[in-house]
Picture 1: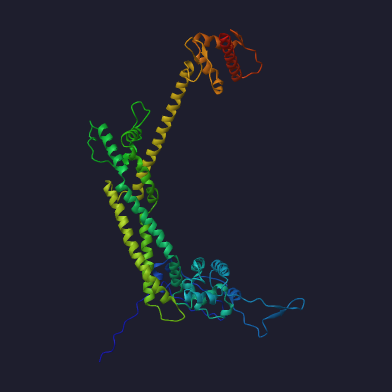
Picture 2: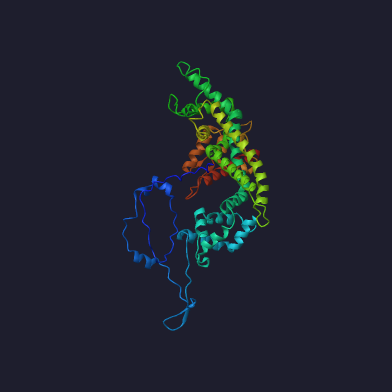
Length: 505
């Protein structure tokens, strides 16, 4: 009878043959991670050898040799003054010193023992381990090679450093690294999907705005009409649509006198014939946030979150039914809710991305050549230019109105009109005094109601401070113009009052 077939082990091509080292001294262990022999051939180590290296082996043994313990009590030793002092305990570190230092600082803030941290992880206790602690714990979790190193340590465990002892303690939990990841994912899940949903909603709102904005449709029609009218005698005329990059050309096309451009003309035409068209500026407010959305990043976010949900699903299937370990029951319930939420969010996200991609095509652009952000930015740029032009036009109008008001004021000073409420002449030609005292305040109103020759003479008398008829003007040293005007009014009215009384007698 034939025996079982035998298989020869695969042959490994070694770069050289190593001599056996004969070292009698007991030395400290260097916890490095060797490359597997079968991988050496494809590395730089294939061209290197340690067989020709010369060094002082005795010095190495003296420096890194493990000394034999004395039978005497190691707790105390006599000092120079004869007083016994405690011997400093030797600490063995297996983890990189900088990483060990950072982990020890983080663990000190926990104010929990290593056993308490391990037990809280086993119970999946969110009260003991909140989000901040889980974030810190995630940075402190041991890597696979570190777990292997501390587990394989054969010396006195009590001599290991705090970091190494922490690693040994939480390494008792199967798959502790993934457990911490999953725990933190669970705590953050609601906020994570809320942020993703908000981004998806922003993209959907941008698509809806560009498809449904009535003001924007009217504006595009005007742009097309004006452009075709200008291009009616060349090959570019008769267009049925334009590229979005053409929107920027409007402000660059100057008028014949160089004082205006086509964008200003467009705004003025819309203000005259379609004033509500400018509402598209308010509609485009949502585009600013949507333009900052990186679609690739959004898709990656959803994919990464879905991937973690799937990993948790696989983990709970293989979880052991252990009363001391709550990972299975807790994460099974969470996985069910998370999967439903993420499936719905994934569908919504894909629909919104497809919608915005279809919109790029709808506007005659190639989605492979134009990113979503670039596409939306073209609308934002035009909206911004349109709004600035509106503001510039408004400033022009205000300036023209001020200039017109100044010119009207100058003309009014040259030929003042006689207010009906001021002094008038009766049928005999005599001046009628104003009835209200407040109407006697300004000289201009009184002069405007006099005959031209009287008004001219009174003004001349006012300037020279001379006598006019029975009215005599006193010279004033530091009087203001208002004072002279009031003085004149009082004297004019007093003079005419005397005449009236004399006529009555």
